[in-house]
Image (cartoon, rainbow, N blue to C red; front, side, top):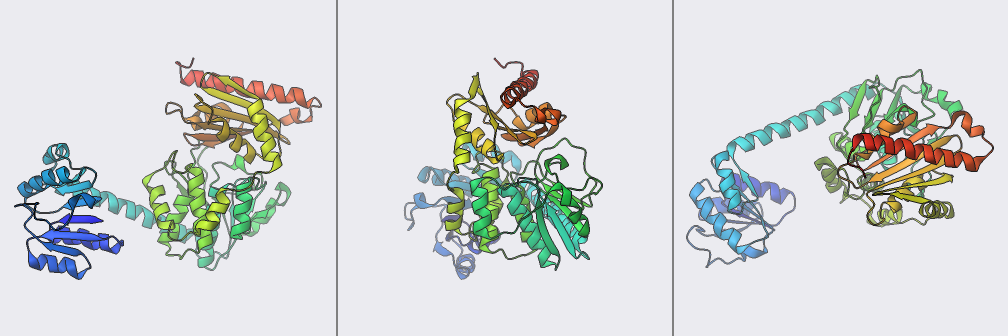
Length: 473
């Protein structure tokens, strides 16, 4: 519930916005005409000169979570702020002031935010720039898609919830423009939750191998979604340039030549970016897509415990009324397969602790998703701030890393260490790498190979870490 002091132009405008968002609003003013306007839009109104006394008020100030002081009289605002903060210690209080020089004093008196003409103008400009950027991106994407009859959407080989939901969002956008769109990947959907997601949401993903990647050339346009670099896919034709790239990952790879590129490293999930496009294209979301996008954002931000921005929170706010909560709960809590359980067990038994770092080599595994689950599990160890899990699938070494150390950007460490050997990337709190075994894949002594790989990966990792952090003990 929001309380507004002053029903003038500013107060009325604020009340109008809050009511449009479904909030309950109480407005106080000594001007009956101004109050009637507020009453006509559904506000509760009280005719009262609050500069004289608060003791006779018919409402309880302490029950409000938000209080906005909007009068044009600065002295009145000061007196109101003093008394309001005394009566309500917890509310978020916003007040206005003539200029920025008044801000420090009002903040000391208890204001949480102070609106001034210059600050308001700056915010308006920033908001318009953001809107302009969003509109420009929509128009550029539309320009690439229009006059096309078909679109191939490619994710990394083993797509996660963020990649899958983002790809499906682009498919929906394309189909709204009467474009045939298909989603392709070259590996496995291995994580139990990911399998459950595809099954429950009834999504269609096409798995092909590198010998069938010529199929992609048959489409008018090709899009790479949540794919930080081409080394994360085995099915993209090397002699072909993508038309569309949309991603949120940090990467040091040379920028690809594409008609449309939207990469936002600060955003927590590609699903956030795709949610904004769905809004810009004014596409009505069904609960399956909304649920998938919500899950994609929650997974990639670790339920907002790692890298996220205002855009991620706004996307979740937009999606929350459209999701199927029961479906989301089932997807978030899948059963664990015996194979994944074995990998988690190996990760625990094979762990080696180096100060605040834990490294575990689990050897040969079936799906790389189990590595990320193992890295998440090991990060929960007491006093551990970074976890690194190493596994081998067929001809490749996979590395999954997690960090809760504010002084270590694990993505940059992993990228710097392994990108020249294969592919690597991620975010400040999580990262992954993939390295080809090359001729070593034919080694008959698998146990020796596993040991050599584990020791080598650990050595290179700590060498880079010590180079970037001289204080590592």
